Picture 1 (tube, rainbow, N blue to C red):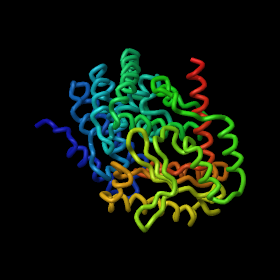
Picture 2: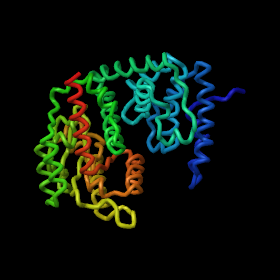
Picture 3: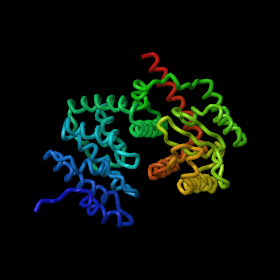
Picture 4: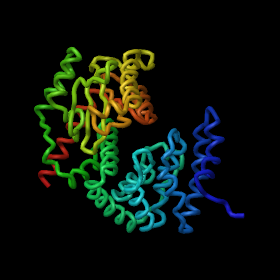
Length: 369
C-alpha cells in the first residue's frame, strides 16, 4: 500500500519531535532530511499537492517545525521546473495572511536573484547541509515571475501586504549585517515612489535626537511630524489613539494595504536587556502594553472598527533602545525573539535610522536609473 503524503502524514512525522522538550540540532536535521526526501519523491513524480497543502496551511500555532517545512517545500517546488514556479506564483496570490504563502514569494525571489535555496545563513540551510539544485532556466523563469507578482500586487492587497512584510524584514536584517537590500530595491523599481518623501536632513536630525537623552514625548513628537520614519508606506498615522477607557496607543498606523500597526514608543536610552543578559523590566512592561493593545482590539472588535475601519488582528511594533548598546549575544537573542513572534516586531531607534537611510539610498539609485 503506497504512502499517502498529506498534512496528517506530515503532522504525524513532526509530532514526536515537537513532544521532545530539547530536540537537538541533529534531531531537527534528521526530521528535515526525511521531509526533504518525501517532498523530492513527490515533486520528481510530478505531484506538487503536498507542497501546495503545506504553503496554504492556515492553522494557528504551527510552530518552528512546520515553518521550516514550508520554507523547504517552497524551495523543492522549483525542482519541478516551470510548473513549480507556476505553483509558487499561484500560492503567493491565493494564500491568506495566516498561510505560509510568504515562503513561496521568498523562494521565487531567491531563485530569481541567483541566491541559494534555502537562504544562505538561514537555520534550515544549516540543517540540510546542502543547497536545493535549481538550474539557470528555472531561475530566469523565477525572475520573470517575481516581477509579475510585484505588478499583480497593485490589484491584490493581501499579496501587496506580504511583499511589504518581506521587504521590511529584509531591511532590518540587512542593515544589521551592513549589506544592501536588493529585495526593496527591486520593489521600488516597480512601485511608484513619488509619494515617498524622505531626506538626509530629516534622518540626520532624528539621529541627533536619538543620541540625546530627551523625554519620551520629544521622540513621539518628531515621529508624529515625520511618520515616514516609522513606516515608509503608511497611509495614515494616528497619534495617541484611545482604545476605549483602558489604553492609549502611542500611534496607530494604517498601511496602504489596509492593515494596521499598534505602536509603543519608549526611549533610546531604555535598556532592552539587563546586565546579566535577561530581558529588562521596562522591555517586558512595554511589550505587555503592545499585547494589551492587540488584545483590546480583538475583544472589542466591533467597537474598534467604528474609529479604525476594517481593523482586525493588528501587528504590534515596539521601538526601544539602541542597537549599539547590545552585545552580539543580545542581538542574536533579540533576533530569535522577533523570529519566534508571530505578531510583534521590536526595533531599536538605530534600526529606524538605518532603514530610512537604506530607503533614501534606494530611491536615489532608482531616480538615477
